[in-house]
Length: 295
Image 1: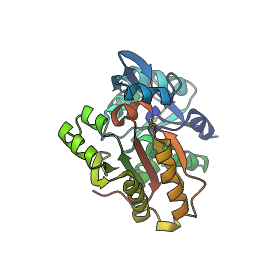
Image 2 (image 1 turned 30 degrees about the vertical axis):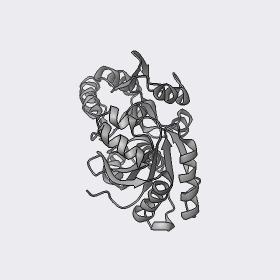
Image 3 (image 1 turned 180 degrees about the horizontal axis):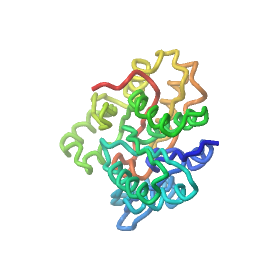
Image 4 (image 1 turned 135 degrees about the vertical axis):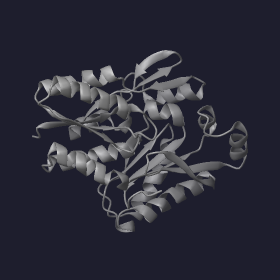
């Protein structure tokens, strides 16, 4: 057993059972749905299907990151147990939570000067961040020390690819990412934006693809283009989706057919309530290991 704790935020979008199985602890973001505050607790407070149904019906959803005090409350019991901590945060390109985590870590290490907290920016999100944590847990189990694991994450994180598409542009309008005119025009043309995450952890629109059928094919082609060893890719592949399971299953089936050496079946997760508050329903995201992201 390692002498340190590996942890992250709930925005890594794995199931509670998955986190427990790999021995990764998580701290919850928050979201406000129609004026009421909830923890982003992996669908425990509100099931994902209900959350996205309410969004479709017009519910207002906002998010808030983990506060310094919440991070302190999260870190302290592990430090009291004599454990160091490797904590990996949601990408700084889409959230400032790393600042709260680092401030809390500095305060905590003043209180426990014999302990060390490594705060690492994932430069990732959703189940791509989750795949990074899944792989980091395997490296921990192979015997990497806390400082070795923190260095490994910083060195390898940009090899984790994130590709997304959306079939519902209304929530991109709400979030100010596109104009209402562009959304109406895109809807008429059946535009499904294909996006990825750049080397600074920002979500960037890359292609305007007409029809869902074509964007499903193109997202698989992007994996073939960038995956480690191409069609001989033998790593894990994760998908996350927001209330569009059939679309996610079509992507998964295409990936499994194109990449016969995959490490297991494609794992489909839900996009959690924090990320989902911004994407809305109708988003599918694909994650895999590949060449280093350079943009």
